[in-house]
Image 1 (tube, rainbow over the protein chains, first blue to last red):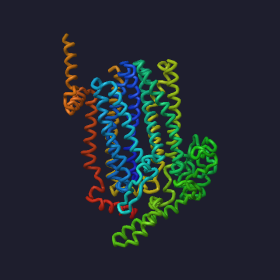
Image 2: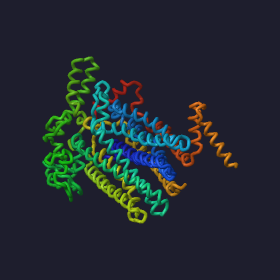
Image 3: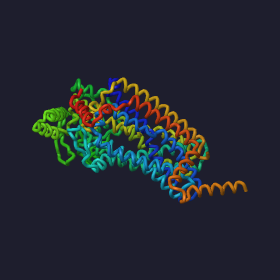
Image 4: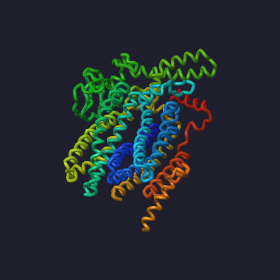
Length: 524
Length: 90
């Protein structure tokens, strides 16, 4: 069982921590901007109502920030303890973005954060407003560097592997910071944060309307949040389309898992809705290829003809490889250098990966005995095969397939809920403009229910991104298995339980304080 | 009358605090000092932050999350350890 193994437990612990951290981050980032917009209204109009409104949402922001602060540091603890090979292997690449993140977070957030909370009546309105905006942009900039680091793992560029230290060293900062994956990920994630906050503000405000309290406050909050949310959603969908385009090019297996696509065709359709056939699992592919081939991938599906081809290449007749196609290779694709090449079978890449690992070992043996010629030969072999390095750790070709059902359903949950939020924001704008929102009870209930749904949506997005790229910690270069430390499974189990308890207590604390503040309302 | 006096006292205190004659460090100190003193909900939140950071850095980090490579003093030793792991996959 995967969960009983060191790898399974280490992944579980990392996923648990990352998902917990991601409960707080999107609301902090998104709410920062909504608060800044509200305060801008206050400064422009001088109306005390906006000051009171801003202050209330600032309180919600503060609670969320306080409970969520430093939860991400636990991920860094895990890098050193559970994933030491990985953290050493990537060290120099992560160093720069994370150092910049730390400096930005410290100076921008702590300094202007203090002015935002302590500065009412102590600094001028404009200085206070500037601080609020800077806090909002500071949170986004912090997130940007983390996302750059994450994007590098999905699409490692701008680095050179140093065989002496076994570390990747950054040779082109801008290639890392501005890679197409990083840019898309940044826009997609940040707009996602905006949507989370917009749904939260709409939901909380709807609760006041349902309770017939704070009508003006709630209506105006919904007005700002729904317009902000709808604009963010449009950008989110646009960047999602860009993400799919780049995933198809750089991580085709992730896209195949997202679509539950096993064998493909020219003019590949996209599954709008579907139920996977559980009999068509990867373990079945290993033990019975004939029986596997006969199984249909879906029990039920509604597909859009040629949709996937259009999505990933803007052409209706593009061949989008499926899981089996990727394993067997032989199809043509455009590589990172823009050349048309034939995809290698996974078995061949495994062979080349082992050659690369062997070359690294030979390089160090030659170095030990002072054999310069041996070093040169080993280095040349390593360079030639380094693009397949991670495949050397793969035991069988099907090991490169991520969890298909989890990726497939998480992707659909994310997309369906995204569509639902377009409807929610559009309805909110319409009902609010018509002046009937306060008596449209079903909509108010729907808005409140949407708050947990938006968290499911955002977590589903990360599941697609992270489960979908398994078994890699760094695409094609390092597997999760090879990234592990020599720590014991029981020790990881102990710390996982501790985290679970700590996180549960923190979440309970947040919700208790949050509900109390919401219950008291903006008048307090 | 008393409240008017109180009001003018506050104004004069604020003027004093934020007057350019005050050293910058002192003004910053007073800004934070006043801010923390006037907190209500913020006190609970700071308490939660303090407890959380204590658990994270003084319990989890010290006793449960020792860096595997932290036992090596030099970069070379760390490299050797990782290279050994990478070139001898289990």
